[in-house]
Image (cartoon, rainbow, N blue to C red):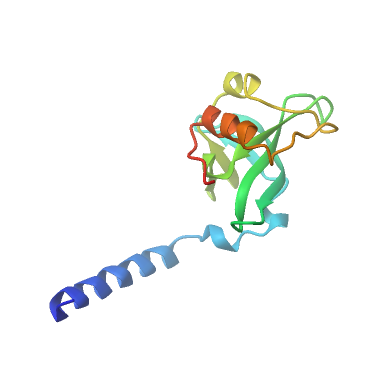
Length: 138
């Protein structure tokens, strides 16, 4: 690499690092900071809360968040496995934001808190990721 292009590359990387440090980093979120957080849509409607964060140990990444929705005071809530990349953290609202409305979630593949699906089944994971228009990572 030529000296001029190498310097330009390092300047670009430096700008990117400075930009990252100027905003809140999603990397510092711990499970206790995520579980229990509300989930809203882009219109600000409350859609539920994060019940669990599920990890895929083999690639070492967050696979999905379990979102509760519906019911009343936690009774009758339906659970949803939502691909992690379908959620955006918004510190202004202190909430995760998903590009969905209530009807979208009402029709989403979900499960009961006492009957969790087998998420090692790639057919099921693909169906869920497709529903949320998320790119599968496997």
